[in-house]
Length: 62
Image 1 (cartoon, rainbow, N blue to C red):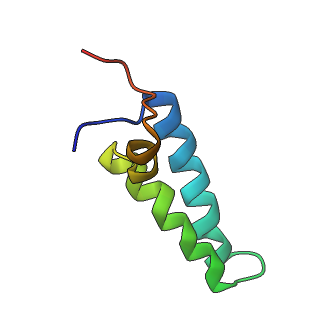
Image 2: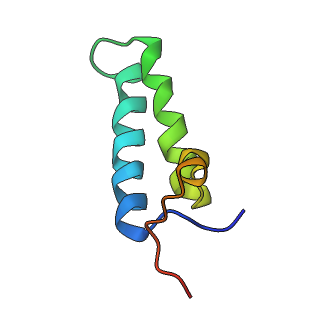
């Protein structure tokens, strides 16, 4: 598992993930907000399985 998620992509995923999870506690309070765990985990791990399948890499190569 090599890193394939760049820093800007990570920041956007964290914001999106936390925003979706907050829907569970604030607002309409639907369980659909737990989908936010997916972008949050991919940001924290720095690896996205969909990017691997599609051959996308947003991080800088060393």
